[in-house]
Structure formats: structure tokens, C-alpha cells
Length: 253
Image (tube, rainbow, N blue to C red; front, side, top):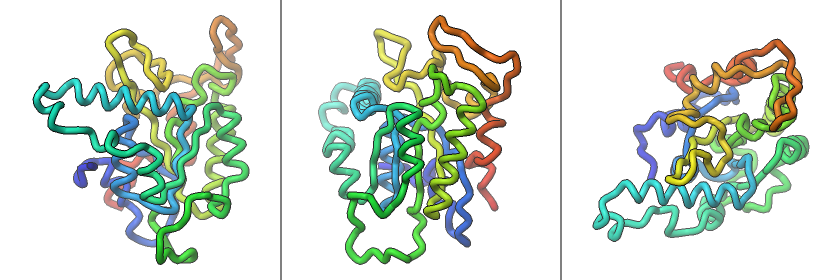
């Protein structure tokens, strides 16, 4: 399971002091890394929103596991089964009392955030859970918060600021900590595209520095051959960092 000394695991344990629910961006993660870390470090009432369809995410998960196992020697593959293959995604989520939802479009994501409440969750609390107790698991995580805007009419500063502000509002009204995790690309031998529809085509394309320095138009959009962009652009990181801090900046405080 998760390496307790890893940067992401360390970031998952930052809420040891007074409860200041500061918005944070965690390191990019593949589907298996995402589930492995969250299942290992968090539980009820954490809510995980995946910015894709269920089918796309499960396919990305399968591809990720396959890529990981293909790098192992044949005899090792025969002896070891990836832990996420031993039980279904939903069995793991239910067992750990983690609420899991899929929002395939920006509209779906915003609609869910506008009505987000832990009270309407179908996921039951674990035995002995005190509703009013302080919990370091009160996290609202969106996987692919930025990526879901790509190749849509919302791929601009205005569109992403609208989504991010709704995210902040949804979390603050329910006293949840808003957390962004972007997907790592999953390459296969036949295509440079990824299951999560990432456009970057180089290794480590979702390194945060690459994300934050990408130029985004202030207004307008670029969708296939239809281009309607403003001449002014802004770094994506400057949009996100109006509200969120990258996890390394929060360490040691």
C-alpha cells in the first residue's frame, strides 16, 4: 500500500494542529496512486470527486495497473497481484467509508458543488463515529479539477475561476478542506493519448511546475478548429494560487 514516507502521504497528514481548512494542491497522481494513498491515509467523511466518467476512470485504473505490472519480471507478475485488483474500487471505497462520485463535465462538477452536503451521503459513518467530532478526514477532493476544463469552452481564466470559487464555497460552508489532485498521464504502446484525455505528450506532463506555467486565455476558448481566444493570457498557476497553496509550501508550518 502507500509508502508512509512519500511526499503525498506526508501532505495527507498536515492537519495536526488547529483546524484551519486551507485549500491545498497535492502532487499529481495516477489512479492507483490516488486510491492507494487515500485509502491508506483517510476514511469517513472524506469525499472524492473524479473529473471523468466512471468508465473512463476505471479504464485508466486498469491501464495504470497493467503498466505497473508490465514493468515487473514475469515470475514476479505471477506471484503478486496488485492490491487494487484484489477488490473492486467500490468495495474499497465502501469499506473505508469514503464517498466517491464522478463528474464527467464542468457542468456536472459545478452542479454537484452547488448542492454539496455531507448530510445527503449514502455512505454510512463507521461504528462509533461522532458526528460533531473534529476529523482530519473532512476533505473534499477533486481529482482532475483543472483537467476537466481542458478542450471545453471553460478553458480560460474566467471559467476556471468560477469553478474554483464554487469549490471553495462548497468546502467552507460544510467545513471541509478543499483539495486538488491532478492526474498523471497513462501511456500505452499504441497511442500517446491517455485515458484521462490529457493533451500533454511528454513524461511528467502533470508535474505541478508544468501545470502552473501553462498560459491560459483570460476569455474565450479553443475547441477543435473553432478558436475564439482573447489576446491576453495568464499563467494557470496564478489562477489556482489565488485560493490554493501547493503542498510543499505548507510543510514546516
